[in-house]
Image (tube, rainbow, N blue to C red; front, side, top):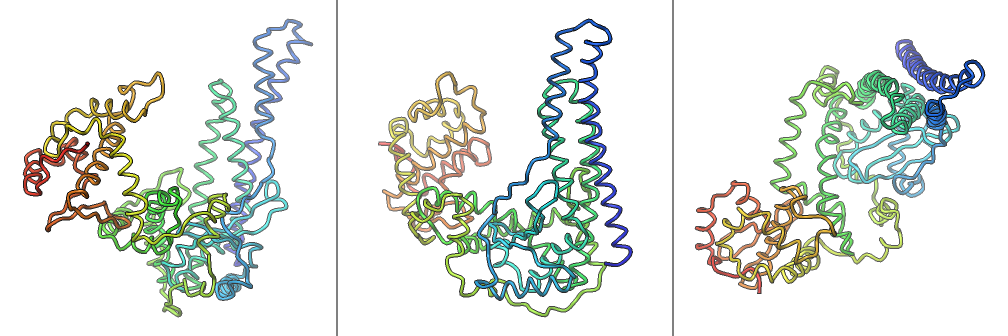
Amino acid sequence: MNMRSRWSLIGRGIIALLLTIGFYGLALGTAFGLLYLIYVEFYVIGTVNLRLTVFAFIGAVIILWAIVPRVDEFKAPGPRITRKKYPALFEQIDSVARATGQTMPRDVYLIHDVNAFVTERGGMMGIGSRRVMGIGLPLLYLVTVDELRAILAHEFGHFHGGDTMLGPWIYKTRNAIIRTVVSLGNSALRIPFEMYANLFLRITNTVSRQQEFSADRLAARTVGAQAALQGLQKVHSYGPAFQAYFQQEFAPVLNSGYLPPMIQGFERFLKSPRVTELIARSEKEQLRVDKTDPYDTHPSLKQRVEALQGLLSGSSQDPRPASVLLQGAPNLETHLLQVVTSDPARVKMLREINWDEVLEKVYLPRWAESAALYAGILKDLTPVQLPHAAHEVERWFTLAARAGKLLPPGITPQQIARENQLQFVNNVIGAALVTVLLEHGWQALNLPGENITLHRDGHVLEPFSAFHNLANIELSSEVWQQQCQEFGIADIPLGK
């Protein structure tokens, strides 16, 4: 570590120490001040105000309990991986650790995220903690070996800069402040702690943003600015995409008792034209926004990209996909899900399924059940009448809620937000459209990342978009009714 980095580390350590001392000084001073107030009442004034005494005593107890340091109970974020099973991956981690002058973390875990992290966990206030690293399984299928090395070098940069040593102090102090503010409720005692919380977050997050720039520079020096830049952009672009895929595509199938290939589904998800457009639009927007909120822990992507572009770029040494480092490692996805879901027994009972089978085995039966449940209220409704129904969202929500016994006692339809009413009715009508039109020779197609579509004789229909678009006037009544006539579905009842 050079002299500049050493002084930077010392400066950050002093800031973290002063902020921590400041908070505990405020908390202890307030708590003992309240207790001293009780002492004055009893032994100096000799007159006791019961309400004031109770307020002071309870306030002091709450503050003292909130600031007591808690033991950091580390929960593994995924399966722990070992050098014996994954020698190629650990060879790269070893190489980056040596290049950045750092020792290896004690434990390395696979996580279900397009990201990586390092931290020090366990112990109390950082004392007795151990180094931990997490590497995203989907990340390994999106980056090259060089880009992975740059991402790892960035993470080792947090060890290099001493950020992980300061992290537990900042993390624990932040939690203590939050516990104190929450525990004090609407009490006037809460005000100084809220003010200190805002000050604490602003200062520590400013420090955190500078730490990110320092870690980026180390990655660029170690592996090359180009690899660091590309790895950074992929994390920002594909991280939110994976979360959307996991929640909207993968989890529903998982909850239905099936286990599709997670990474294969994500790869198909990313090939969707709709997803590709959304990712490109998101990245363009991130590269446009230059400002950072005072409470953000990371600089904006634009700021980080511009900082890296000003550095010398290194040539690519290993453009292979990083997934080659996992060759010969079976059942990784299953092991990861067992930890993520905290229910290994349930994961073992899931039935394996291909993505091409998901529509037929998971969604179509679910929609058929919905169509049967609401057939009574839909039997007199035809597709050509949907524009009129779309102007009566509350009426149809009331009918559907009653038929499906949706609302608990004491809750009326009027208490449900219109957007939620619309979404529910749209799903009911969409399921009915799918079920009925399949019986009339239409074919369904559903790919990860795409809306389900129905096809027949060159015609294409999105059953789960029609009612929603009609209600929001994104689709005109005339256009929809004309389509219904062209498709030959105008007078087909949606229920039996």
